[in-house]
Amino acid sequence: MRPPGRTLAVVAVLVSLCLVLAAGPAAATGSGFACLVARTAKPPVPGVILGVRGPGVAYTGAAGAFEPGGRDLRPTDSFRAASVTKTFTAVTVLRLAEQGKLRLDDPISKHLDPSLVRRVHVLGGHSYGARITVRQLLGHTAGLYDYATDERWIAEVAARPHRTWTPQQLVDWALTHGRPYFRPGEGSHYSDTGYILAGYVIEKVSGLPLHRAYRTLLLDPLKLRGTYLEHWERHRGAPLSHPYFGSVDARDWNPTFDTFAGGGLVTTAADLTTFFRALFEGRVFHDPATLRAMLTATPQSEGTLGLGIQRLASGGEVLWFHPGAWGAVAAYAPARRISVVATVNQAQDDGALSALLRDAYATALGKPVPGCGR
Image (cartoon, rainbow, N blue to C red; front, side, top):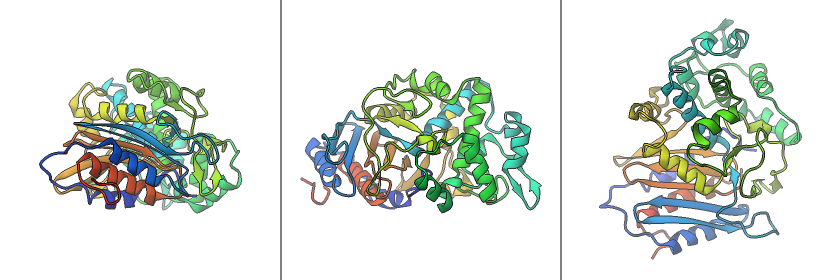
């Protein structure tokens, strides 16, 4: 099983081929996108949903099955966003910062239980927990051990898929099975553990359970009626499509292994498109400086990670995106005002999602794609 906190490096490699200077996007045809979706929906991918928006571009489509042997997948069906949830988490923290309820450079000791802070980062017999800042949690520079990339934890989830995990149990698993990678601020390493702590910060500062904080600060204002935090909220909107781990249908797995701040949102192509476009087009933050802070890539990551979002630069252009397990991705190219959201509902086929994102972006630019070009 690939972990929910994965970074699709292959996405960056493939998408970079499409980030080229051009006079401007030509008119993209719906048939081109439909061709991409249809050719992607083949084993081991059960079904595909794709949404693309931009100047002269408006496409949402689906192909394949809601579940193998079942009805066709619909563009309106919902899917697990997995680690794309981290972007929502970071934005929620930043909204609280705009309200003056916290600062990004606050030490987490200001907002979390002292006994937890002392335990989360012990290196060489010394606790560095009190040195961790909220910004470091969001930018993956705190050095916290990542349980989600540990093969032992992945095996444990797969062996007991119906187990209920609490956020504290996930943190405890990280603390008992690994050690910090580096002292806070001295490196970069993707960490779902850090995002659980960010979820705790949100709850403490907002005075709300995490799912209510999402809803109050983001989901309701943006009218994202088909998006909800699985397990913590009742099902909303469209049916949840079946995500697969290889040939295993994982829809009935207990989702609590990935439903607290680092993952867990269920969403739709329409909602995810609305969220990403609103984020970059000035409809989420009150102050443009907040978005600039979010998109300031950390030097420790060599400029590839912002706060809850990943950066790809090529040919003078920039694509901001976040991937998630179960084959979800959301991306936005500010210079082009093009958004791409997708799911392939498969945790074990990065290549299919990478190719779909690459070719959908190329099609939006009016570029021919082998096998689906004009």
